[in-house]
Length: 164
Image (cartoon, rainbow, N blue to C red; front, top):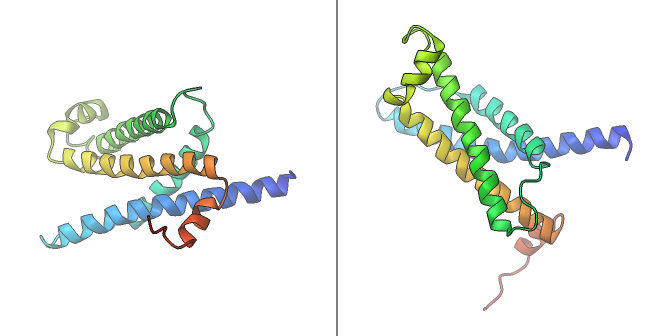
């Protein structure tokens, strides 16, 4: 495989995976906007959704090449990867909220320490749950794709549903 083909493959891969996460994060953002609109609170976070999708996609591409369990059931691999990735996202969300609240708590570390006691803690949990679900489906799809091969899942979905 030439360098040009490798670059094109990498760009195509990151494009589709970013689109996947963009759909999940965009849906989460849409739900937040619709809920907060009821209380007349304006929220704009399009750039954060796009950036988050790109970061999640690149992280998943890098981390999925790391072997975690060998000769173990696929469901265990899916669950372990999803939990590890979700824990990383949870930590990153805590650090982000700590960075945003560093002026309220007179520093970064006191802000991180007190962030789960604040009124913003439910944002962290909601985001973590949404990312967990997106990663769970992504990891499940990755395993299914390995067993069925490329585009086999789309071929199955294109067929008429079996009667019984």
